[in-house]
Image (cartoon, rainbow over the protein chains, first blue to last red):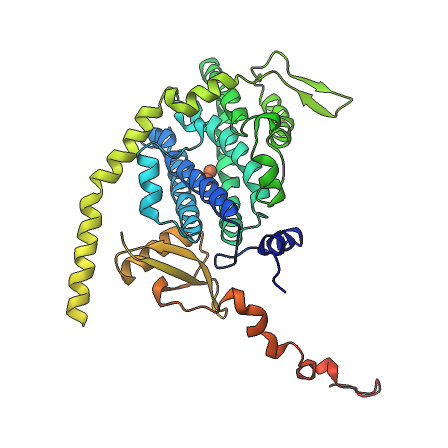
Length: 310
Length: 91
Ligand SMILES: [Fe+2]
Ligand SMILES: [Fe+2]
């Protein structure tokens, strides 16, 4: 008797059996994964740009080494994820073309500018903090190569967040100007960080299917709430004020209530009208095009070498 | 586009090489150096193998039930299949 492959597949998912590249999977599952993993990879790669802006201007060698190592890690995260995505039958060139042509999306947070050194603190603390909140559950995603890549990523992320918080803490212990700089960075990065979790559950149509496939384990709103609950005390501890007049502890819910997110801004940035969208994409395209001769030279060298050894 | 390579890393002397992922490189030497940069930034390895992905042959997951079936009913290959009195030690 022929068993319905779709039922067999869902049975494996329900039993927490991982799906591997050559296993049968519904076309929509494959498509969802390719979109999600490639967007994630693009975000890691584009995410290097805002911080790359400050490497040469880091205030000490210690900070410079840390920031450089962090940005290198993000390149690695992009590569783990591209490799995981390729196991689904899409090739790297296609993925890169989609990024460079503007067809593919990446996290909207990276379209904001990094105006001061304090932004390196705010990004590590908040942006990597929010990324960790999203990524930890993905270590248990149903697709094996994605889950394994995320385990590797999560191991490396913790230092990113801690070095960011350390920068903020140091600034808040400094001069009045340094304190103001830290507060200003928090003011600018707070709301975009909350947007990183994506639209509210009621406006997130694909969420239910992703949950059923165990690609996603928690809803956007759940993760966002957890992020707020964890982060507000961290801000208070270093004497910074979260820029939200509606923020208060709700004793009954045992959670913080927080103000409404400006989803119009989110949509604008996502659709290409953020402060740095054009600049970010151009930087990626330039790097790719200006690196073409390196790729060609390496190919020529490999071919020449191969001819000599045959 | 450069060919795809599978990367295997020995994390510690005395352990097996284990598959960790893949990457693109023009040749083997470049693949090994890229694997070092991508997969061992925190001393995760003491040795790296790379194999061009096209040379990996794999069993077919669709046949895995039948393929691994011969081992399924051979409990007599396991020590617990055999009765030994409780008084007997060191066995
Ligand atoms: Fe990352
Ligand atoms: Fe990070």
